Amino acid sequence: MPRWHFSVQLDPARTAIAAGRELRVSYKDAVEVLNAIRGMRLEDAKRFLEEVVEMKRPVPYRRFHGKVGHKTAVGPGRYPVKAAKAVLSVLRSAEANAAYKGLDVSKLWVVHAAAHKGAKIRSYMPRAFGRATPWFEQLVHIEVGLEEREQ
Picture 1 (tube, helix red, strand yellow):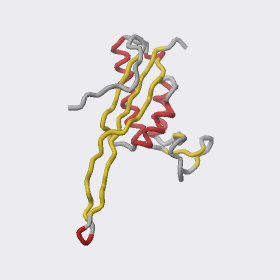
Picture 2 (tube, helix red, strand yellow; picture 1 turned 45 degrees about the horizontal axis):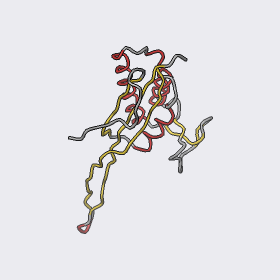
Picture 3 (cartoon, helix red, strand yellow; picture 1 turned 90 degrees about the vertical axis):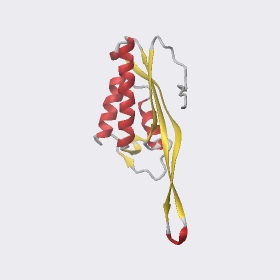
Picture 4 (cartoon, helix red, strand yellow; picture 1 turned 90 degrees about the horizontal axis):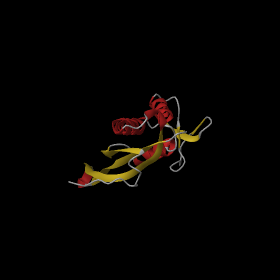
């Protein structure tokens, strides 16, 4: 069994962390969603992700923006619904961890949000004349850290 570690060290007295391991979402979409919510208040991040799931608010694509259509007031952007649902689930888990630790949920900020590549699911699609095409799926690790602030 693998032993998971969190990628950054946060103060355990003021922070709560959560991670989703080996998720079947797009790595590029997860990176863009997490870049969008990093630095937000917890309530704002949850509202943002719910609006993305409802396809009312696009996620701005800053890094992986090749051939991405532009959206109004955002620039290159998309609605990565599956990745937003996965990040929202991990964010709610971090919120529950913070409440369990006794932190004030109304004062939480997203201080760490990262996506890392996980294992690949390797399979092959048979083709004509005895050939085969690889059909790989990249799994993703999502990490979220919340910090209690007085602001």
